Image (cartoon, rainbow, N blue to C red; front, side, top):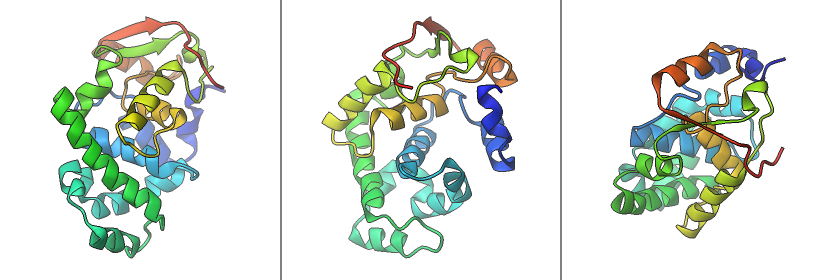
Amino acid sequence: MSYCEWANINEANRVYHDTEWGLPVHDDIRMFEHFSLECLQCGLSWDLMLKKRQVFRACFDGFDYDKIAAYTEADVERILNTENMIRSPRKIRAIISNARCCQKLREEFGSLCQYFWAFSKGRTILYNGHEKGRIPVSNGLSDKISRDLKKRGFKYVGPVTVYSHMQACGIINDHDESCPCRQKINDSYPTVKKPRDGEVT
């Protein structure tokens, strides 16, 4: 079974896989949405994230981090009381706190995207063996970024969450070699091949 068989779990996963997962993201709002979804997922299933995605977008102003950074406790209560929303004050406050941290990153790096892409020098990473389905849950790069984000005040940004984010936003291409999405990305964007890096499976 290929790694990308997860896309066949249901229609929502298929659409997400075919139209978003692994495509390089260079828009800050989309980058923050991907990042926030990974943070919200901690301890939960990805299926649930996809089912509630429109609820999340409504609660968090389409993941515009400038708007979210201005939220108050009244917004926390508003979000908590939204129908079908995850009832986690810690995660909601983390998204707000992360939005404020993103503003500081933008001051330093120019944008949230530039911060993340600086770690791969603007290229999508192709790790040896990943095309065969030998995919880790985290690696040396995600650990490095995780530690840097934590120093900057970000929350819910462990190395596993960061690795998933890098997969989602195209910094790493972890599509299976038999998956047509892999070659489409490689043909359309700059890539770099790298050896396996401190991987945790």
